[in-house]
Amino acid sequence: MRRRKIAVAAGCCLSFLLGTLLNVLFIPGFDPHQQQQPPPPPRRGVTPAIAGSPLYWRGGDRESQRLALARQIRERYEEVVRYQQHQAPAAAARRLVRPLERRLMDLAQQRTSSEQALRLEKGKAPQADSRGGSSPEAKVDLALNPPLLGCRDIHNVTSLHYLGSGYTKAVYKVVLNRTLAVALKSVDFGGHDIENCVKQYAALEDCYRLASYKIVKEMILLQRLQHSNILQLYGYCYQDSNDIPDTLTTITELGSPLEMIQLLQTSWEDRFRICLSLVRLLHYLAHSPLGSVTLLDFRPRQFVIVDGELKVTDLDDASIEESSCTSNRDCFIEFPARNFTLPCSVEGRCQNMNEKRNLYNAYRFFFTYLLPHSAPSSLRPLLDMIVNATGELHWGIDETVAQLERVLHLYKSGTYLQNTTRMPKAEYQQIPEAAIPDENYRCWPSYHHKGCLLSVFDVGEAIEVCENHSQCKAFVLTNQTTWTGRQLVFFKMGSNHIVPDPDKITYVKVTG
Image (cartoon, rainbow, N blue to C red; front, side, top):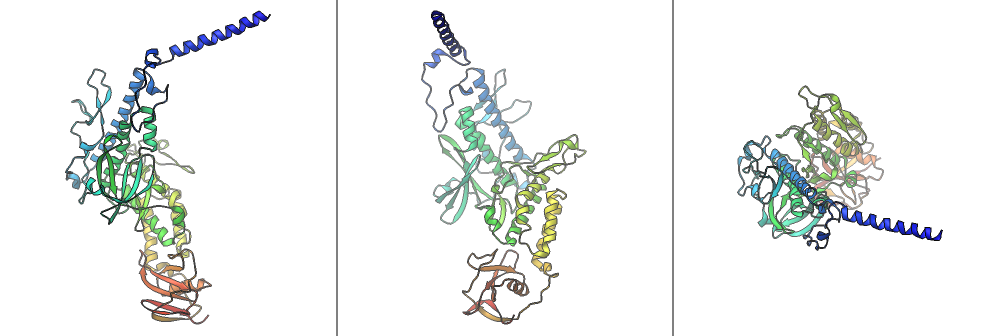
């Protein structure tokens, strides 16, 4: 019995050793001679591929990986060309001093062998045979309006400050010539796109070319789409970086990041301005020279604030593609909380899908938080109607922008005050050219963090506000106005110390 147990154990061990040896010898890609050779040193900035990954497979598998990356580069390039050529305005006929394609990425070229497979060839644009397709002469020009900022302008920057990064780009704030603050955008070598691509293909330079086409596409859209709520493109620069020639940096207008929590603490007037800026932008995108443009990555972080106006800053995920359909069931839009089905037109296109996608995203990210809260009471019914109509997609962008412009008119003209009772409970003494420097109290929302500074249409509205604040005993009209032309007023809890001020008028409560 003891010998039998020893024999069984020995047999198990021998089977295990033989199985292990066979697995080692016959797994795909294993070459005993090749294993004895030291692996090549990794390129700077490239994460070494994990042993056993497709990058270390022999023959066609590794080649197919390389060709897959080449196809992606070609597809990204062709997308850039489509946006450059699509309904280009006549003003775009002006050429750059240096054609953009001389500085573009390494592109895929058709293999000249009988296989006609794609391969990468440095320094050339996509080739095609005489039957059509991309041409070696295809150009991707940007007709930038002067003044055009370039490499010379950003070589001696000051106050370099990292602002943030996303999947593809990193953004920096710099000061040019010690006077002009701008934003610099470039491919983030530590970002999601580059990191994942390098892990899969182990080709840093080609992965950079693929990612940088997003910036080129954004450059083209920033130039083609001219609107006050789209960030301005100032120029660009190509320079060597990370052992890669001609890496791209764009120079754009600088804005402040959109912080929703801070925005909720601002006045309703400023929050309404953000929503109005947004619908004006979406109205333009729905009727742009390129057709209806949708923002596929529609989040608050894709926008910035410049002088109180909302501006879109990221356009690399914008699209002008209209969904085709054969029935209404093909026109299905899915959101986290709601789904919609749009009509399919007789032309086989989903009606206004790009426009409606933008509008519902505006509703769920902006309107629900910014429009109704702390709005003037007489405007709330109209604002609630706007929020509900956009949340159900009952309106298109044309009706939405018309209704918000109507709110603006009611607010600027003071018409919204006509249906309110404005009989003062107290009398107020007017003191011209006078101010109250102290005796502040805090209110919300306020334009001043240490006092109560609000905007009013006229003195009558200032009196109404003062009587609604139990602390208010006086108020001071300033010569400052908001973006709507309304006057800024300081509300005070007393009037014990009044000083001369030629630019202000003080009103003191004397009865009541």
